[in-house]
Image (cartoon, rainbow, N blue to C red; front, top):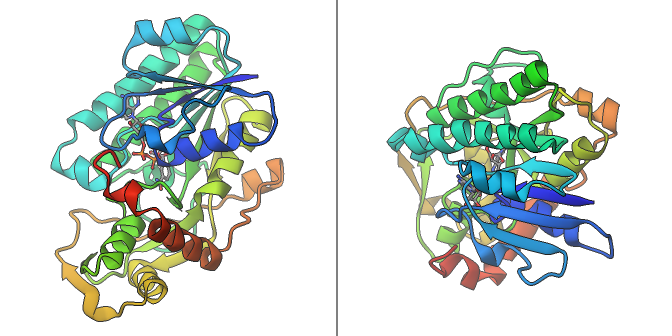
Amino acid sequence: MRILVTGGAGFIGSNYVRTLLSGTGETRVTVVDKLTYAGNRANLPIGHPRLDFVRGDICDQPLLRDLLPGHDAVVHFAAESHVDRSIDGAAQFAITNVVGTQSLLDACLHTGVGPIVHVSTDEVYGSIAEGAWTEDRPLLPNSPYAASKAGSDLLARSYHRTHGLDVRVTRCSNNYGPYQYVEKLIPLFVTRLLRGETVPLYGDGRNVREWLHVDDHCRAIDLVRRDGRPGEIYNIGGGDELTNREMTERLLELVGADWSAVRHVTDRKGHDLRYSVDDTKIRTELGYRPRVSLRQGLADVVAWYRDNTSWWESPAA
Ligand code: NAD
């Protein structure tokens, strides 16, 4: 079995690759990653006998057509992933997330390689005050990031409906875990608190997010790759909903700091109030269950950033 992973040097992709290479399995992995600011070779076991790393852009059609033959599956993580950056400038989000995904789908179609797992996000649904989204809910993305992910998500669906390409889409809630670039809430807050600095909490901190450990997300993605159905969409949730204020409280406690370390800053433009997915489908069809409790996962992640300062203090991280 040989799997091509796009964006495999990023946070979730590298976790997925390490999982595929762990143990004595036979799975070979090719990572294609542009190594933007968010990608880092140090996230991967470079030199592993079953890993090939290619620095490349998913918009590069000849490269993809050259690389894909001989692979049995594709897992597509590569994206611009930070909402705040998409508010400052959306062009690269449209290029990578929309055009890049279309380029990958075309290359898979041309070379006959599949299945393709397209890693989408719960943010494509927009914001929900109560209840939880099922997979058939309309896409109403609010940020340029979410809109570009919705575009790629719909392109993935269209390649299945139009061409019969075996594409499966996952829509996951917020991830946390080791190797997450320090711009996102948990690593940003943890690393700043570890340095004795203040942390910037948006608005009144009442925005609600559903958190999932990256290990659980990667297990779910692999279930979809192995046993999911072509053309289907699978929500993936963690079930742990917290306001950003509650998350801040937990991180302060774990690092041993108090509220004097928190600065309230002007809220993010168009900040979605709440995300929540109903993931009954993947639980009943594929037997998915998250295994990492938020309490244990957060304690582990704080310990990881404390023990790996060279990773987050180095320029490449
Ligand atoms: P990340 O920003 O940490 O990593 C993205 C990776 O993609 C980086 O290694 C980067 O170098 C690479 N990349 C960017 N543009 C590329 C291009 N044109 N060609 C090749 N590689 C390119 O992102 P992440 O948090 O690991 O997210 C991975 C995927 O999961 C994304 O598609 C994201 O939308 C989705 N997702 C993330 C979360 C989350 O909480 N982080 C939740 C749900 C879904």
